[in-house]
Image 1 (spheres, rainbow, N blue to C red):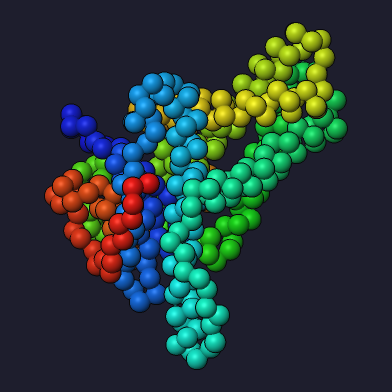
Image 2 (image 1 turned 30 degrees about the horizontal axis):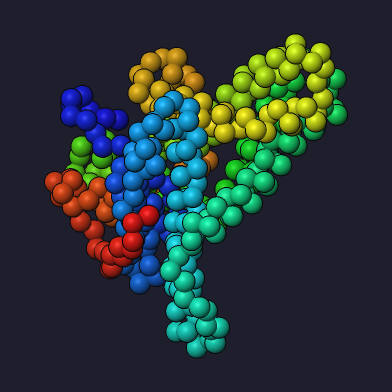
Length: 337
């Protein structure tokens, strides 16, 4: 947890990638991966959020929706970069074993257009499974179509069950287990930075893998906010038109998903600022509980990778007093994002 110092802590966050961690600060994005030879490779991008560049966009809810879009694009691109590095290592391993490897055209990373396409496809699948399907099941199985709160409560519970089943199912996959360990390493490194301790593996390992600002907690908040928000929307629709159906629900709920995301983002920020409040702690407990699945205890080598990513994201002028520099094989600095 942050200490009681009045000094403002630079906001940082990140995500796990394949055999690595991405960290984001207000000015940089850094992705560090552990290569097959044992070294750490780091990619750094200068990045400034659209909200920082266009101050008129920095208003509640809207800034949340914009931030979520930016995070998704950056997340897909950094995940692709880490995947490319993993493929390179696998190809080198096959060559060393005397196997024939088909030469692939070297790419400089995923373009923003490709990232947007990937996100669009993922959103279509996600909305279909976790949004439309619960509405369809609730409409056709339960006789509560005109009871706004009861309908959205049941649909919300179905949505949560589907999401938990998905997370629990993938948690048994070998690669996902590694991903969840790096997720834990990311949380530990962020906690240690917020506490202003020297960022060594020994110090970082003392911290929890559960962080209140985690994307996992955000998804839980989205589900809770959507339950209440869409119950209000349905009430307004029924009062206005006197009836409601599956088609009307889809037509009114779908366009409002970005608004739900923005509201949920503000709720997450508020909870992080008031973490000691008993009510806030009670509200974030489901998200922290879910992190028992989505984060795992990392080893020291994985923590080193998280520290390397955080160091690069902070920049030399900010990290020099906090970081015991791990072994970094190469530093790649492309054009501004």
